[in-house]
Length: 69
Image 1 (cartoon, rainbow, N blue to C red):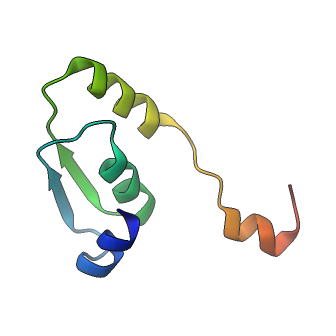
Image 2: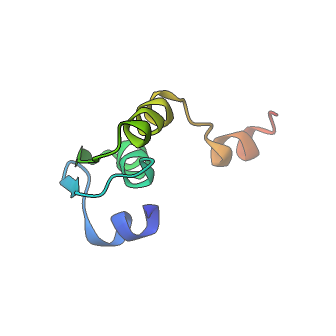
């Protein structure tokens, strides 16, 4: 999803996902600086997506450049 968003949207764009599921598109938007709006009928999936979006992300490129682990 990240590659698609990089190719077809720009930083600051608004992305709407009407079938949010576990939040894959939302997470990619957050990582790429896109504004995200999503809808999901299942409370369980909303809870999963909320938890996923609250997690931090390790920048693997930065880690590999500095040699930290």
